[in-house]
Image (tube, rainbow, N blue to C red; front, side, top):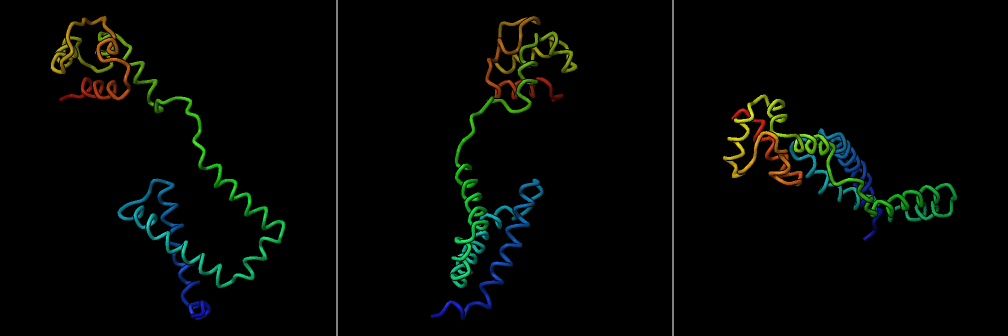
Length: 165
């Protein structure tokens, strides 16, 4: 079976799957994907991979010529280098998300200050904290002295304290 017999569908496969993968990739990049965009991108991009491989085999002589051209080879090696470096995990400067410092600042404030931010009385905050199982505190106690320094816990408790429910 000769691959050239399939020329009439290999190139359209590459073209169509390129459009699909490019469009869904751009939507995902800009966080505009909806419905099945991400799933289509993940699974149907295999059609692009298969199509490009078959297209390369179909045009093997031309494909090989790119490895003898200095400019082409440099471009190919550049992308392979970028691919290789994409596997390195960068050292994290901070484990906190961008809102972390704000949450930490609120959590280190005394309940009397936090009550102003929450637009509630210190007694209302104390009652909510008591409902959550926190005891033995006064309006000068910083929230983090009660709940600790875990950011997720601080976010959860602050959300409960700030809510109108």
